[in-house]
Amino acid sequence: MLMKNERLAALRTAFDQASHVLRIQDGESEAARGDLRTDKGRAGIENFFATSFDDELHGAPKILHADGHSFSDVAKKVVSIINLSSVLAIEDLLGRPVDPLRFRANLYVRRWPAWSEFDLLDKAIAIGGARLRIMRRIVRCAAINVDPVTAQRDLEIPETMQLRFGHADCGVYAEVISDGEITIGDAVVEAMPAAR
Image (cartoon, rainbow, N blue to C red; front, side, top):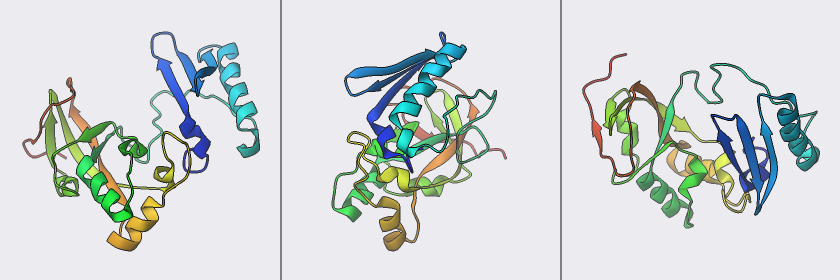
């Protein structure tokens, strides 16, 4: 978990849906590869974490499969949206550059005024061929203090935001109402009121 194990940020992963192969790259070299459908493939990935993160683990790591499970802060299947103007406001607050990748969003939006994403709660938006309902603000944890390139815990973003703004929220969760293709540069427009 990035909130506790910042070294995870240095790893690059790729999962091939068709072959079920997970690849983990550490720096320039491939650190592990395994077909998650097989005992051998899962064991290879588990062994990588057991060896590389031994001092941080409390027991042997295990790869588990659970249909329909989502590792998210909310029960519903959602996408996260980050307003890049809000990230710039955080930069101004900290007096330092903040890589938007710290926020691990599904969608990054330009040209919205800072924090205006909070005004869209319970409203529907259209992006490309998709339609989404903005559900809730994203309360940020210490995971965003970790630089996604260097894997160093180098900022105190939620703490500083809480002191200055009275909240540590950045970004919003949105539920997909109707799916569709989204491409880079698609306009984001407010749609008809979202049904609950």
